[in-house]
Length: 121
Image (cartoon, rainbow, N blue to C red; front, side):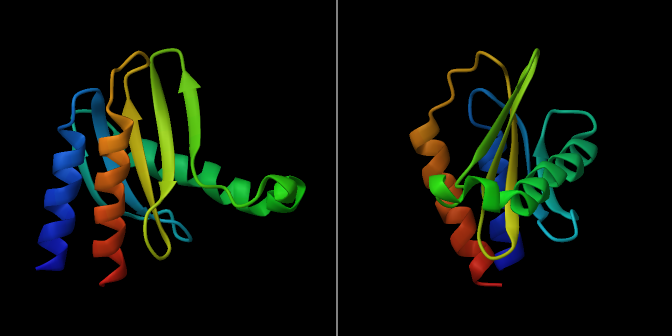
């Protein structure tokens, strides 16, 4: 039941206007649990993006004055990668268009729902 709920929630997030794809990735291993959306190669993007997150963890002491990292956004010429912790040991990776009108409040609400499902596993 929870695995299906994870998939359904991730698919709903990927279907939001402005979202091309998203994936749920295990932080330590970089393994993609689930993915959804339109982007070819989303698995490669998600695995590589998790390296960004692990790197920030290794460099965290340099940024202690700023507090814990809550999200990371990388802006590329044709798109944006957003990384967000999503439950125990998991990372939500989203690929969005550079100038999308994504409703980030709705996105955060969906991300909280997904994190709750992850924590039930």
